[in-house]
Length: 261
Ligand code: PEP
Image (cartoon, rainbow, N blue to C red; front, side):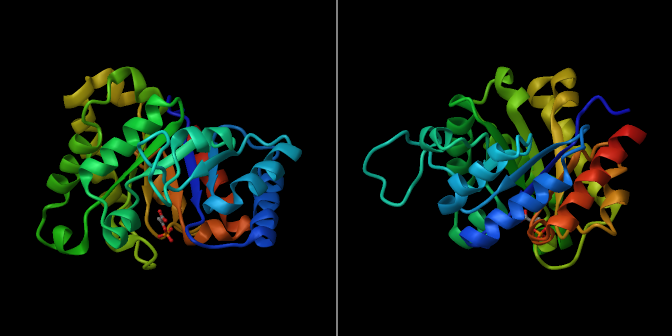
């Protein structure tokens, strides 16, 4: 059995509405009532956080409430932004930083991702740092360099004492929402590199404790082989997290894989 409890996040992106978000949260909590051996979080859009929180609370669920983004300032004249303190106030427990769509669609750079992640962890919330190479970077054989840079910059000035609340999501950009997945071996190779990078930054023991999850078109039929890899500790799920049954199956597969390691 792996020492690292797996983590599975459902990133709803800019999908659902108040009704369908509640239904989805209900489907997930009901499907996971009996499950232990995996930490699960859902990341609804900002306007539905409180609605989803109410569903999770009503059902006494251990599924965590997550936010897809946050800003690094606490409050002030930052129109349109939402701080970690505000998210905490709404019951959020975990926040994504540097999701590939924030980096490549909205244009966030490593330095901004770092400021956001630091603010999340310093405020007492859990943080998920998302990293991953584009297709061009992979074709050029640069995936390890890119991931190492995103890890080094993303974790700058973050002390080892905050690592217990950090998850790293390796999400090759070419696999997100495309229906293409990394092979289990490609995922393992990238995760191993990322763990080595963490060991260089924080020492081997700390690196062994950090959960590194895979994201990129995870589906119920292919997730088990990826979760079986030594350094894969669960997944970040986009499209398939919009179907409660599929998401629950993926969470269960992560728990089973960890037991078998
Ligand atoms: C994601 O949003 O992080 C993701 C991996 O999306 P998808 O599963 O749809 O590729």
